[in-house]
Amino acid sequence: MLHLKAEPVANEVYARVTRAAQLVREKTGHSPTLATVLVGEDPASQVYVRKKGEMCHKLGLGHRDYKLLPDVTQDVLFDTVRKLNADPEVDGILVQSPLPKGLDEAAVFDLIDPKKDVDCFSPYNVGLLSQGRGTLLPCTPAGVMEILRHNKIDIAGKRALVVGRSDIVGKPMALLLLHAHATVTVAHSKTRDLAACVAESDIVVAAIGRARFLKGDLPWKKDAVVIDVGINRTPEGKLCGDVAFDEIAPKVAAITPVPGGVGPMTIAMLMVNTVRAAMLRKGISYKEL
Image (spheres, rainbow, N blue to C red):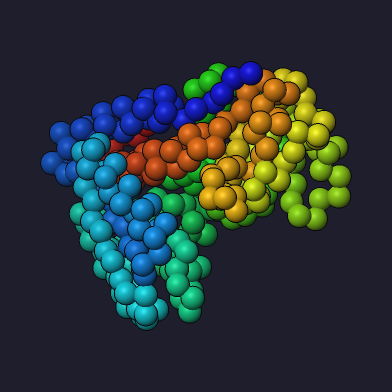
């Protein structure tokens, strides 16, 4: 059984990002720049934004950090996004989710310039993704695809199961697997016979947001690849995924651990999107990424 860890995959991605960012600087004198907008003081969100900024600096990317008070109005937040849309030095805009209650998150994402939408949340980019024409891809699903490619896991013709149908992970994950020529099933809270879905699946992506939701007593294929996107905390405060790792690992061919599996790939692909956005805006080929 193979543990599919993110570190070697992320390091490979970061090497590509570093080279591509250097190419942008050589051709234009501009460093690809990410702007992050944090509203409120949610501790987890603060950690996520800090890590994104640190990675930008480590890879030679620019980073602008905007912090807004928890009681900020929708209009002020809109104005912040509009200014970043118009700023020629900003290539990517990320508004950290979740936003405090009372703010319309969907309206904020709709306002972000699709060419700077490095989270790939805008309807425009989601539409391109659905047609297989996306240039900026949703970070976590794209990270899963990198893990599969890095480990030479064949996708074409395989049966893939995505457990979860969120706009952020489940739906775009299904689309990316479909574009890679998998036969895709999406399971969710209303799925009647999850066991039957698992039994026929070569690749299972768990993204339902419930701790250890998928158990070892399901009929796993011995050559199955299990990708666990979930990040949950047990009552004891321990991190765990959406699958019962210890139960499932001995029964399948490969599995991602939590922590250390998919999580680090989200920031890695955010860096890819930031540099790719800069290249697209500057008319530079992004094949290096």
